[in-house]
Amino acid sequence: MSFAFINSVKTVPIGLLGALLALLPGSPGWAYTEQPVTNAGHVSGKVVLNGTPPPPKAFNLITYPETVFCGRISTGTVWRLLDQVRVARDGGLQHAVVMLEGVDRGKPFPDASPTIEARDCTLTPPVMAVRNRQDLRIVNMDPIIHDIQMYEVAPFESEVMFHRPLRMNPHHPKNDAGAHDHLPGTPLVDTIAFTKGRRIFYLECGFHEFMQTWGVAVTNPYFAVTDAQGHFTISDVPEGVYTLVAWHPGMGGILDMKAVVLKDDTLQVRFEFENATDRRMAHTTMVDNPHFGIGTLDTFGERVDIQPTHEIQAP
Image (cartoon, rainbow, N blue to C red; front, side, top):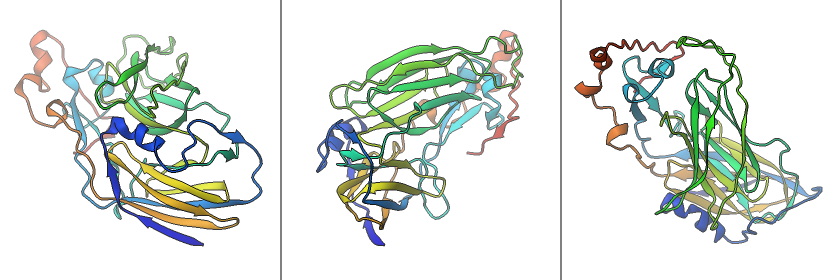
């Protein structure tokens, strides 16, 4: 068993990450050949955050449509929280993508297209790895329509990858904000197509800004997303010397190290991010505003009764 440790972060604007990844030693671009692996090793380890995670983003539900339905997950007042940096008690960082760069042949990619699910005004998964020129499937399980907007991220001018309505299942009960049956609508399927060497994407609902998914394009199937404790395993890696990269949308940069993978051996690694990026802005910070309180819409004859029946969020 081999061991490695890294905590030197390359901090760059998130839109430049694609260019930075492309410059890593041994990066083969998009070329990859699937073939049997007879000299495989494995990479396993943990990603941690040493610094204090930032507070979650807060969204005032009064300013968004379907207030009552989306309020099923909320603080019970007017706030919907989005915690994008989830950390275990020992610092283990969830939803970090760990990927090997420089592997040009080996095991096949997964057959299934990556899928994002809209359920209870939440997009799942919040972070994912995708393949360029691959179909992305998005399914709406809610009794409301969502508006899917996907962008490839650049430092100064992020570009739209696609923008589509996400239809709901027509058999949901009509005019019933309390309806909670999850019925799949017709999936939205579109092809992921990065340009200009970009490899990071951001996807959100245009109606409900707190519905977000981030992703990174991988050049081979040797990647993993960390679990709730920050652990990951990448299996069946051809013996060789590669670059191992850890990325998380909340960190503002990447960590990378040389990875020497040996046949029938498991390389144990540990990535340590020192600080997370606080991406809150004025409208996503929990500050009470008398103009957007729980009784605001009473003035217009509409009663809003937010009941967090699915999940009570705590700031």
